[in-house]
Length: 316
Length: 316
Image (tube, rainbow over all chains, first blue to last red; front, side, top):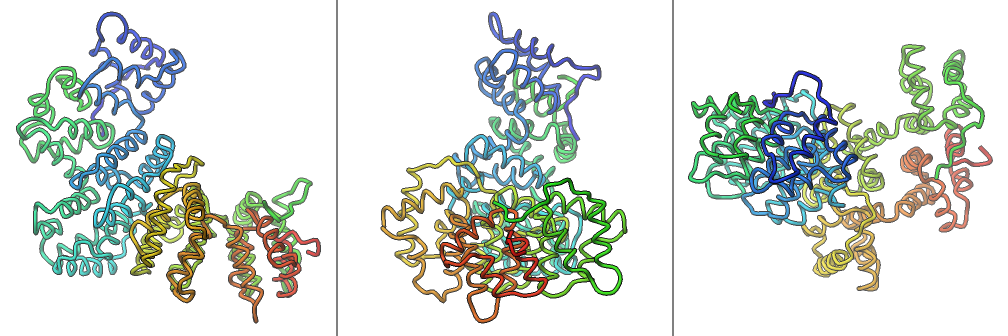
């Protein structure tokens, strides 16, 4: 469920566009007005605003925002204002270019989105970068990382709830035997994770737990510093418990010295309209503090205000 | 270009449905009438006929056809009557179940279709089989075959004409060096073939020819009996010269003792409405015989009549 709040009364796109233009004009920028409008519009409304802004002022709203804003606030407003598929394409492209072995952003995008939303992101990738997400991921990675990532990115997964229980039992055994042999890059291990439907993987991992008494991710912790294993655990978490995965990313981004604004911005901008309510519930359960309070404590200024608005905080 | 001929006057779907029902009723089946209708309807018209037949007689037209017809004629009519995406899903599913190393049907489907048409086939696969094409391909293959086939099946390729010439030169060198080392299953070799756009691959293979003086497929003939190399050559042919690939499949299906009806039926049913004109031109150029004459010589009965109708033969 979404955490953003949208006005109950009818919204005039023309008014929004005019107000935004006003916020950019004269001395300084009216950040409060930008937040008041953009943080309280859903995907369809933002799309209409961008189209109307472009046709009224012959300028891309995103370019105007980038000119007026700066730093973390700029990035948050920019990501939020993008269409979801363009945003995912943008983040995936950034992740392939800044590739580090520990980068789980790509896994996050391809494993937490539905098959349909991932497809839309791939189409946006074609449009924006004149190439495919698959070729960039494959080009910028090597070895076991490529072996895992390419089929994860490429597969158009089945999304139905149909589950083959016999297969789940067999494949749970197979995963366990590969883990026992420490063959974490085994062809069949990767095949199961990368091509089976989420419902089937979930059934397989439940069987794993039933048969072997432990969560698979516990068994994949042999060496916590092994970056491939870290990525494999993130993959499994994203496929089966996306809210828990996102809760952990947020927790780690604020519960340390210095905030990881990159991670915080990304999760809030991408999930606010999707499942941020569930992520915030998970956060409170795990940390005994409401997510908006924790974010307020760790951030400041317009960046803080925009985050709180997107989190639906009463203080926003 | 298509080879089928559709009546110029308006077609009544209700009439078609009634005529088909008549063709099935009474003593025996009126095969001529079935050919007269179905072989002269395009994809959209066939779709309407199937829908109208189902709602009028509460029976799937395909089931009715399967009951009335038999052997090669049945299979040709069945494949032809299917929607293109269902047909591709059906053929791909069959190919995964009857997997033999020399089976190039899967490569044919995933490499000669556009990214969009392949996507539609994957969606049809989800609907028909309640799982993904990717998981079935990965499950039924192993080793180098899986390593090549899974990314080929999975990748949503970029379809634009944009070509990076610097990249084409670099990757042509890379392909050549891997071939020189006989590393045909090299990660980067497969990455290039499986993820680059067709336009980019074409540019790379032109560079290959310019720099090294030979077609890449000539260099991949080291061992003509090596099934993996055979599949790799088919992949490259399908990606760059689909008409030549299909011409060869047809040529081999009829220019030998006994006809390979499976291959002939598949190519005619899948290409008649797409590029069969170009394939037939290619056939005549390569064999100095018109394709329809060659097919007529090698086949008989209703099967022959239906093939010739789909090939747009004047004798049909």
